[in-house]
Length: 385
Image (cartoon, rainbow, N blue to C red):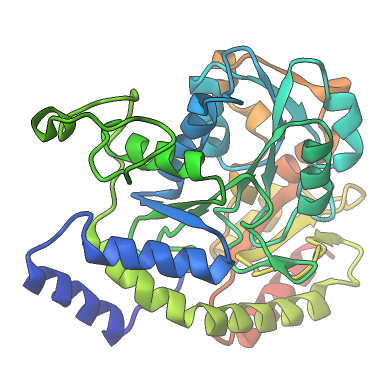
């Protein structure tokens, strides 16, 4: 993975060190405001990782006064996503209904939505995989039509667009990750976006111990008392400490300025990859739904191809081409499922299984990768003849 930092990020960190304010000060507030403005959303809450963003978002949905999720409520989820899409849902006692993927986009196959819906369904999770928007518009409309929460996990797809609209703006609440290899990097970091004031206040409280300190007054989630002595340490929610550092936010402000140019570079590489692999029937590559911000390049070996994935991965290793399983693979294939209350819509996930057993990805970077993509195609062409 490429390092996208320059002198600007180093100077931003030095500025924080010089200030002596290391946690939850002016840079965090400015980055939250800038990130919300970039997406045209009302509220942003920064945390220390994308996984924490998912945790805080799910917790806020569960603590919402009028429509809070309750233990045993059902959530419709895709079979492929990163583990921490699912873990907070399990940890809050929710029952998951897994839906197979669309093999072309790698997002949830929305043709299963009606079958997935039951009287216990209270939410749907939309996950845009590796830069490619899933059917966010379809899921949003389905959620609205059935009075469901729409939780949008956008941790892998910052700056992607669907119908000209940025991903991360479709859900009632949306999450982002700023890990080293992601579209922007703050070392570690994440963000929760929402237009719902109550969800925002819940997320802010949950981020910092579940207390009221730092919340606006008035607030939809508590009434301020007269004594400041007790109010400074008043706990109203079973919260966490997932606060970001000022350094993370200072770097985030610089990275956000670079984001449009970095996305253009990623999309240029994507176009090269599509030109080389798109017509090759041996490989199934991710089909754009809208405009991908191209986290990486996914490849699934066609089922009729008489070659095992391990032979292909061996060739990649021999040529020092780094590769990974697609977004952690099908979560249903993992040991952790013994802890979940769940079922599988339709009884199986054959397309997610195909991606899990015969898929992989190689990284994209915000610089010219034409020569590397050509080399990748040469290696795969030779091993798959």
